[in-house]
Length: 367
Ligand code: SF4
Image (tube, rainbow, N blue to C red; front, top):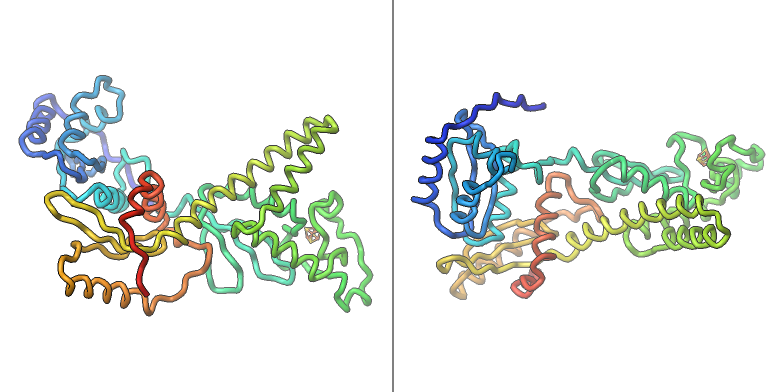
């Protein structure tokens, strides 16, 4: 349900000064998260910082009224904050608070899955690729994702189907393969489909393709989506170079755009796969005032957090906890991340991409 935007009220100079005094008098330069709250109790903004005090005071120095910081302060009459043991914990807490309060001024990280889409390889006699909002996981179809932006994803999937000659007609459209006995009773006809006529579908509906021929192309699609095969990209690149050499520049430009869409798709999926497949470990982070923490991260998601064990007994207890947490876990569908988890996965992944040295503080999860 769309939330009704509350009426905006602006705070007075005296209230602004009171907020600044509150920050000056109480905030410390430690990692943490903070909230700006309106007179009506609405959480307007959630932020995080390695140094909460410095960050909060910087808002009061915004030079231009149009700056986001200044606009938030004009609508807020209270600021509160909490400290976290480290910057990584602040990031996680910021994400959780944003998801909980959905503050108006947080334009990032507010999505709850509505902006994501998945590629579905629909199970049928001649499987086809399509874009869906969420996996149903109740059939033999294979899903990949999530990806940002259904429209952009739809265009990339269309290019992929075109390059590989996969069908895109209705799922219940009757298929007649060339090696199908039925073909001898029903002679092959052209399907009256433009994609077949212009060579963008191999024609599994009209006896123009064998089962194995079509399924081998489906296998290429899977290999591409799983990062094992760059064939579709190479094929487009070759066509683009040829068109350019023949001075068919308009066609070359169109092929370049198609190529770009597929490369973007591959890159986005590579990032996702990296996160899911490589981010499984315990991660120890030094904390302020000796509050060192251990995070148990599995497939890019933080599954548990606790103080770093100091004694042998505590280490054994942590090991046992990790083992029992994952021993009964159901295997997940390859290539699929639940939409509710994608923001955290991306956050953890981007943390380790930006701070690669932090990987030295990780240890593989013991079975
Ligand atoms: S050629 Fe046949 S199988 Fe291919 S898209 Fe057209 S109708 Fe579907």
